[in-house]
Image (cartoon, rainbow, N blue to C red):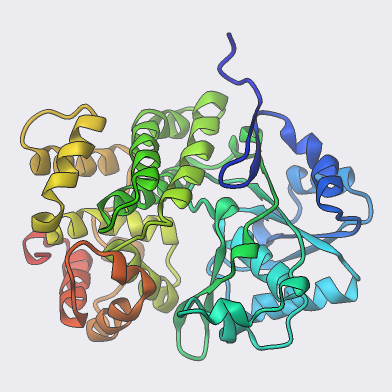
Length: 388
């Protein structure tokens, strides 16, 4: 039996998974009543065969390719102008996490009258939105990392404050996801590794987050197991469709699981990305072991379960921690933030912003601004002993 059979899943939204399913883009548009979509992607994908193919499949579609690696509000405004100028009635968010986030936020804002920051993920601010003004969304991921294709939010940088803000509304969940592994076969090993460990961090932090959510916990554990097995294969043999398909599934699983919560890795990664324009997945990959050390006393029970899931032997903390270090090394992930261009500049600002980040509320060990600043310094210098 082929391991690459097509599959349709209806959790957490409609997902059409399998090779070649980009061809079903017209059917997805018809299902959601989209006649004139705007395809939103980033500059790097603008002239690629996959984007040309997507537009050929949906005649009359527009193209907005002005999304940067860490989307800023100006990208959203430009996308909204393109959406309105073209009289579009839906969005195809196409690409990696940044393009997916931007596409979702453009669709969300297309019929709103209030400013973007009025919909930050704070309390019940999402109820300010006019639900009738949210355009339908199709998500087509080309990387396996953020899982933004099954998320109800988008991350946008407020350039005035240099802070990443989470824009949230339940209706930002795409109506259809096309999860086609053929679209990710050309992804370079370094990006495959960084995005793949991003998915692992989502699963890891969700499982370790406090609270009772067994549905999220089960999904997170299976996501970690899939990534352990298939991420090295996807990096070593980019054309391995089985590995690519399993990684796309694991990425969606990570984003589904983190409805339970995230933690300190993301709390620090968000301000680091906003201030130094680092790749989000790579930043998470570098930070993960420093937070494992920091949170050790609060996550010992979870580490026992993770060790069993990953079939690791020995004392659970040592087993998981050592495996993470070796896994990163195997995938050529740098050990320090300095190695990805982050200087030891204004650690107190990073610590303060991390303590205010929504992800901080899910960290297993309550941590103040000084604690996050200390972890940031440790990650820049590569000093594990200072992380706790």
